Length: 113
Image 1 (cartoon, rainbow, N blue to C red):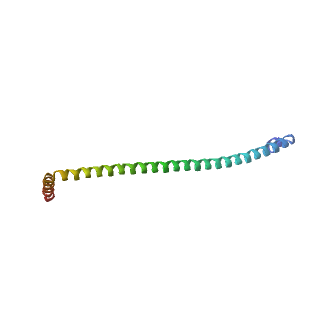
Image 2: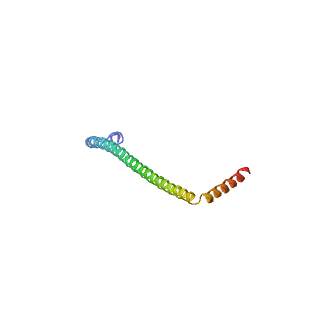
Image 3: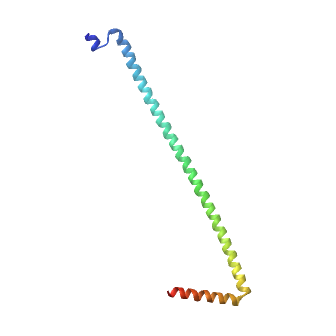
């Protein structure tokens, strides 16, 4: 009975030794697999970060180009408006002078308050 409770019988010693060595081999294999999986996850994370960074950079560049195009359009429109204003002043200088005086008077009144 002592043999059953304390140590396995002699016939099972070989099996137990094989089972323990098999478990140790399985544990080593699992550790190796986990290390490889960790490396793969790290590489995937770096790749994803690189992809996201490239996409963000491209987005910023695209928005910058769109902003510059919008500014160029506004500058063109401002120049056109200026040209129209100059042409109108040259056509009707007295009317333009009267309008400028009226606007100046209104601004003076508003600034006193």
